[in-house]
Image 1: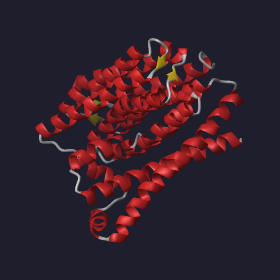
Image 2 (image 1 turned 90 degrees about the vertical axis):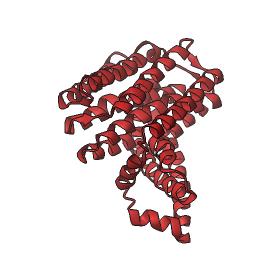
Image 3 (image 1 turned 180 degrees about the vertical axis):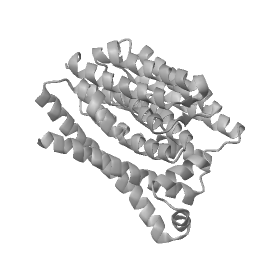
Length: 330
């Protein structure tokens, strides 16, 4: 029972810490005069993946590779099947042609790259360098295509600010009042501290539950931990769906999945080589790739994700969870 409490507490701290970090980082970027395009691309686009980052890095350094890998792969599966499935079930999601050509393809390419470099059963610092270099390449590509299309991510930034309850008056206040600046820095540092603390508590609870249920850490990482660290994406995307802001819902998930594979695993593996569990290579990575391909085909069919397609994605996630616990408990 105590392990469940640790798990819930850890998820709560990760969620609150992630929100604080995003708010603080946005405030600092405005104060520093960083362009909305760069801010939206780097801070907003990847900010919701901070829980996954601290959990996977912490797990890798603590000698828990199954949770480090499982958290990322499981989060990517949950983001597409669970989060986008739920959002599309609420309201059909339309996607811009640019995002379909660039981001949806990048998600599939990232999944394929991951599968190639884990063929030997591990992630080395060389693999990490390849992943991080690919992330830099994607960022440059995204920046140039957004700039060329004259579609800066300011609208995404505004949507995220609204969702985090930062009003225009607050952002103006951040830029001019010293007290607001201090509070913004405090939010950033406090958010990072909560993320670190939450990740350690969540890991403690997850390992305890795995031992208590007699299942492997990989299963817990792929399911409970993965869903827990995906709560920021779930919250933001569901809110965006209710507000009929499909670009935010889909863009948030696609950006998060790219950063999870290229950034989080890259940082984790460069700090500590990570062994990849056999079930991930034989099963979960194929589900991850299959999910990204299925999403692309759904979006390609009419540049939207319909309620029926969203419901199919949700059913797919429930089936994945059932198979994980019934056929791959260890």
